[in-house]
Length: 137
Ligand SMILES: [Fe+2]
Image (cartoon, rainbow, N blue to C red; front, side):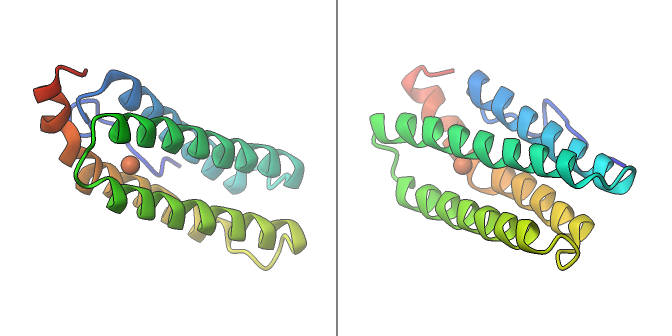
C-alpha cells in the first residue's frame, strides 16, 4: 500500500534539490509501509526506519542551511517543526527497538506520511516565492 502518492506539481517547493529530497522521503515512507504490511521482518524494518531518520535529518539540515543563508523570515518556525519531527522519530524508534510489538507500525507510518505531506504543503511551499525572488531554484 502507498501512504504518500507523489505528485511533482502538487508538492513542488521551487527548489529542485528539495523536491528530490521530499520525493525520496516519501519513497522511504512508502517502502517502510509496504515491508511492515507484508513480511514484518524486524531487521528490515529497523534498517529502513533508520534510513528514514538519517535522511530526514540530512534533508532538514540542508534545508535549514539554505533558509538561514538567505535570511528567510519563517526560519524559526521551520526549525522548530523540523526539531519536533526528528524528536518524534527518535522517540518512536527507541520505543520500536525496545519493544517491537508496542508500536502500532502502520498507524505510525501513516502519521509520518501525513506529517511530511502537510509540512511540504503548508510550511515548505511558503518559501517557494521567496527563493524564486532570490533566483534560487
Ligand atoms: Fe521544511
